[in-house]
View 1 (tube, rainbow, N blue to C red):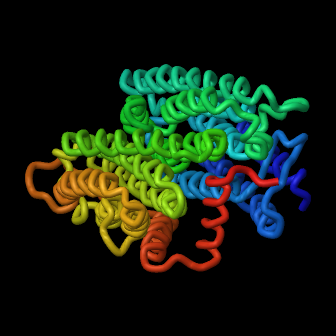
View 2 (cartoon, one colour):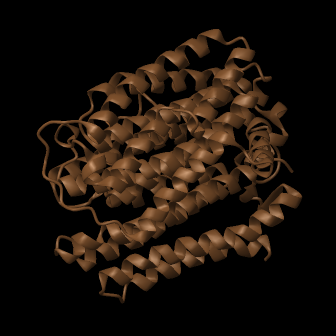
Length: 495
């Protein structure tokens, strides 16, 4: 299949899926449509990946769109997380629909917005034009905001407006960074060259370094707001806790990654324009450790299960950014950690959503012995927390170990110390939360019996198998692919 056809075909799938929701009145049938569209999008991405392996980079439509290893890596993450979240959602909403809590009109709106959300996230990833990327990421905010509204209660409405307000402020900062980038590259000749990441990567000597440094600061603050980096993360705990569980999973599992992806496109350009003096990496280290420290402070005092996981998102985005700030092999470890975090956090949100539904509360003070009362999801929650806090031999331990190893061999002993201190603080507090919820004694809310579909058991097994496998062994083809992804991040888009 020609690469020029792949992207329009993927977007046509989502448009057709959204249109197919309109005439349907059966909520169960409507919920199955996102499963089909996500599966088709994933299948369409496979031939693109096969062609990419032989060439490296494809430019489309006047170089305004690009597909390279970094794009393809995140595209697969988006498609896979959306696919399993769509499957999970068919069971998650089924009970609510049967009890009349959710109407067919709500499900129809949800599924149409869901598919639009996935489509605009993919548009962010294929953008080679800095203006197109900015517009696409702003569109993700507008589309996804209404997905937070699980019902009409005040908390979900407040969370939606907080998300809209803070992320809109962030996108204004990103806009200023975009404008400053164009101003820094004003010497570039020819059409829209100053707007194309590929041209900026090719001609860093034509970029004003001082202006580009200011641009990068605005970019990190702006897109970092959407990525959940501290101290701009304040929308995240509310949005994650109030949104339906499948939405929380895609927010944490891939939306944060896509916002960080935007920063990754600017990183090599800024470094090259500044003569590779490490200033851009230092900025990332600053925001990374700020996120780690905020998470270490706030995780111990959480009582809401989903808010706890939201602060883990802040923590792990900080870990990824620390790896990127180190550069070199730290970039490889950061990209491995991106996958590890997406899988583990998705499973953790599924588990938390099911447990809180069965117990009738998200307050961990009233949820005890979850492993006994809801064995499948209670066990999945406990193991997913162990993964998130870096217990061996799971994959997050491996990626965190690789980041610490890179910092140590680079002589960045302060980085090693701060990283280990914050990781230990999170480890102790999160483990206590997990033990109390999973095995604790005391007065509890009375849970309803656990009913687990075969497909949900499959999701648990597959996610845990991936997390265990990557902790024990990284297959050579996947390692080679991650090296190519890291090369794009370090050097920019190749021609």
